[in-house]
Length: 292
Image (cartoon, rainbow, N blue to C red; front, side, top):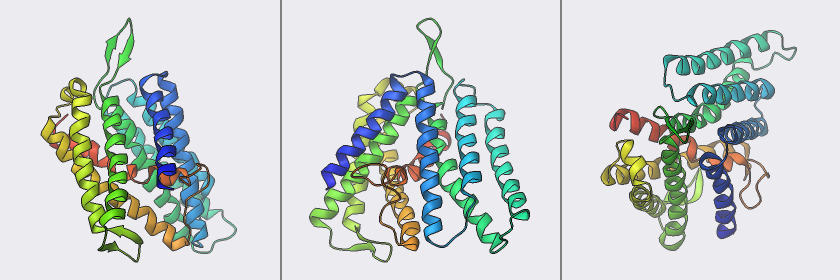
């Protein structure tokens, strides 16, 4: 079961990386916007299973706008105040929109809970997932081959996905082989402290190895072998937390998978749950620690 799940995951992320590295830029936008929107829809479905009302359509529309608009601004490689102003504006519109929607809602029960659940899904899925776009366009593009733009940040996205998924595999393998001490059994009974240490160790090694795989572009982003390993270990911790965060939501709704879109995996949210925590962490590491 694990290897079936791992194979499905590898295939899905191979498609994403192919879109980022080989396909026209619009393909990376389509995949990110599609994945983000589907994951948000699944998140709202889980919240509904937990007997929470949400404005699903409004939330998904604003989430799609957030992912699309950020890509449009950042793809030009100009990290300007306008890029972040757009993101803030979408979030403001989302907040105002849920208030207006509730004012005209015939079923006025639990207004605060409904608005909070809608905005929670938007921030948890769309806003956190949007950090992948920000990592992709960490620095302005360099013109190559007669006008084509090349961004070093796409190698950071590869680093992010590689380390996160190796962390997931390390947690499973080490936890399955020698796991004896439960981590937080009330949330995820199968996770162990041994699995956590395995995830961190494997993620650190994966980060170190990824540096040498893409040494020139990652050096351009101010990474070194040491910082690549440190960032990898940090992402290993955050990947565990990201997986546990989704487990908290699913446990409330008493569901095993967020959906059935992906054979052997479950839903799209199950595929990206770790990345929702590792992407903003890596972005902060580049900006605040490495000053990229």
